[in-house]
Length: 428
Ligand code: CMC
Image 1 (cartoon, protein in one colour):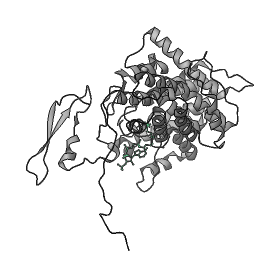
Image 2 (cartoon, rainbow, N blue to C red):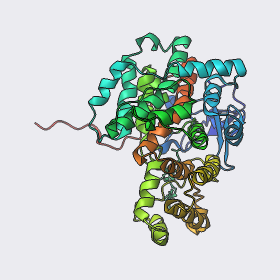
Image 3 (spheres, rainbow, N blue to C red):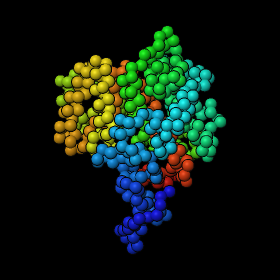
Image 4 (tube, rainbow, N blue to C red):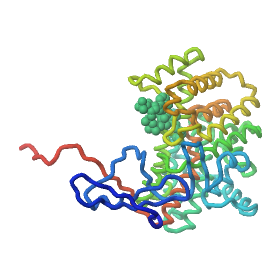
């Protein structure tokens, strides 16, 4: 756990003579934390629904300063990683803590390439799903099912097993993601190709058929790589916290990641990229935007502008800035810059950024606002958007799971403020 306390807080409770002294710890950067662990022995729990003020663990992986729009992976700013690095290098960095040298990089890329195939038996799992099953439903199921195939690497106390599992998951996610798409299309699955880059290979498995190869444009492959990179990790978000919580019970990593995939699915989290496109579809035209902005501001209307707002960023999401630039590159390459969906997205962004409600509540476009538009332009169906988010987020989930398992950890077990009946007798 944490190092020595740097200072202490004193909690005075009405009617109790002695204040409770609570240690305060400092991280390398960011807010200090008050250790409330000993409050239980004093008869109190802390109360923080939604974990808005709760640090659930120590971590050295990712840092976010939401007020200033800063995102660092192992200290490196996301803008620099997006410009100078690539997705697999970031995977290595997240897992190992340092950037690889050229030998380490070549070995890592080679290892990932040689784990991309999935066991042939796994194909029969797909047949059990209805063709119109949501690909996230399929992904949750098949990733959980991986634990039934890799008994040789599920000893969570063995660092080598954890490493092999990390490689397997990063390598197999695009294959499983593409298979879930092909299943819905009623098309044969396409095997991975080891001569292609990570993002290129994913696009190949999505769009090639046994009858026709798919030529992957370098701009589109770069955009896909960047989408994976920008989603790779985001500290203790809902799905990562879910992976940690599931993993804290000693559950195997495939089951823990499947739990993370389920948490990611919701529209408040990874499902937002799909929800952005559905919302733009519903809005229909630029002329209808003011009406929807009005709906979003109406307290009695549950409608929200999807792709806007973030629990941590109260400034522009730095990933959205990079994504916006990639979006323009892709649309230019595809010659669809005057796309009506993009026109709506731009207008929505313009109005929302000027609107008093959004300004006052500090609601800015987040990463999902632009990623959906890029994916749509590439020809990826909307139901696949969250699957792509899950694929990109996999190294983050594993890095956090591994960080937790490698150190001393406890089962995650929150308490509650109970408001139900007190003891009552069962009726005779
Ligand atoms: N449109 C309209 N109003 C909003 C929006 C929005 N997108 N987001 C927040 N608000 C309002 C909300 O109604 C509330 O108003 P009030 O204070 O008057 O009650 C206030 O802003 C604070 O909202 P909150 O729900 O208490 O904030 P939160 O930190 O719990 O929620 C959020 C964060 C991302 C769930 C929320 O902003 C949201 O629902 N956004 C739309 C969904 C979305 O884009 N999600 C993707 C997040 S980024 C990708 C990822 O990391 O998963």
